[in-house]
Amino acid sequence: MSSSDLSNDNGRIGKAGVRRRGLLAFALVAPAVLATAACGFQPMYGNLGANSIGSAELQQVEIGGIKDRYGQKLRNLLIDRFYTDGRPAAPRYRLETALTASEQKLSLQKDATATRAQLVVNAPYQLIDAATGKILFQANARSFTSYNVLEQQYGALATVENAYDRALIEISNEITTRVAAELGRKS
Image: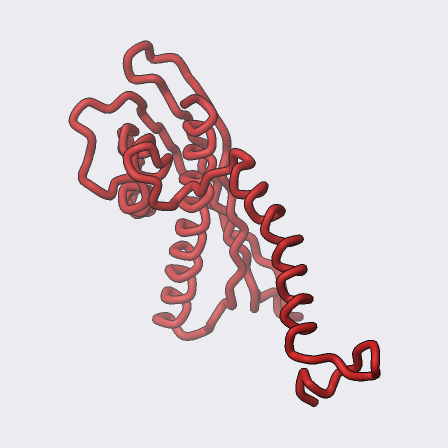
């Protein structure tokens, strides 16, 4: 059915009537779109130039060392997310993080062997003012990641390693988002 097949006063509507309805809908929707654009929200990772939370404030955070191999993986993920133009020469903030992990067996067979497990990774962290040493913000990021327990040695190691990698990515995303939101509130 084409727009010329729609009915008007005489039972037919022309293309001009369809255009008027389209313009009326645009006139009603446009102010709502413009109003939400000026509501004060800004994208956390967007390209807003030098004042962007993602590019300006996160680059002022020095990420402290984290013990153990998985701690170093988490630190590297955080470095990738925080620094787009290299590390800060004189950071205003310091991020201190610790990392603990535990594994829980979930699905047990009759012979008491597990077929499914859950990895719980916990990362308490603090955002510290580098000049005063005052704790500005502290929180805890936690990830629960499930994986299959395999009988083959290499497969079992690979699934555990993959579970750790997934958990660390989830934790690094959470830390980045929460620190950026906190710094955005302060600026």
